[in-house]
Image (cartoon, rainbow, N blue to C red; front, side, top):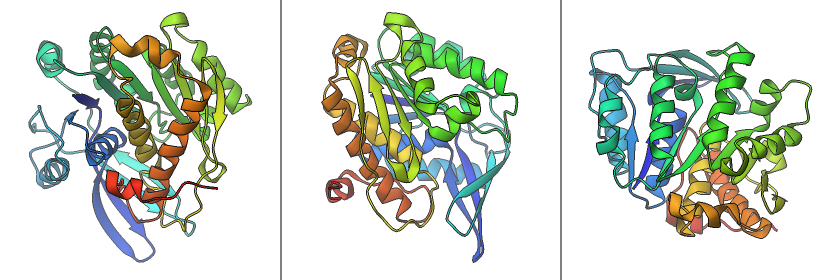
Length: 313
């Protein structure tokens, strides 16, 4: 079982052609992406007992994502995405993030979990961020931990606060993915790749096995304990970039699971992944992101779609 914990929300997308509403949230998108790649996934997050909340639950169930937590009486969170002429998204948020009572249910909900992914708003915004950290600490002895800071300066504007929280989760994670924009914001004036290399050292021997940086059209780069790797981004016509990083994250994790590298019992093998293996994972994940940017909205590929995308020469 793979578990994703974090925010689910509704993206209200504003384009020149009109307004649309789609279910989103970075962790939720990763959960859907993993399910579409044929992995058993559960999503732990909150959503309201309202029309938007119904949409969130229906969207997850349509991709066979399990929901161990039901709706609550607070409003479902909303993100408004303004799409510019180049297809890039700028976000504003109306959020409620908390997971009351989750501490008493972790042993039950995480039973059998071999990989736990979290990130973005869920790991930064109080009071829920504390509950997410507790879940990661609980899962760490038996599960692979994955983390994507997916920073939102419009929500968490205090960069020192965000950096402290990000580094705390990085030190507990086995797999870390960040965008070049994330790292440039967290460490202004520093080389992005050097910041990623420093993250690999956080936590010492118990720290990350790999840190991956997405760089848009430049293609992803990664560092593991055996070395570094990078691949080109597949060339596609971009509809928009909504959910591209989440599709990349899901496919990266899917590649690890397909190789039998999930679960704490496989942590040593994950840390010994050769640079060539990292390169293969990057190429696989870049293909998933390419499918997503080629069509509107956060719409990750199925395994069949991903297998049909040719590798970049």
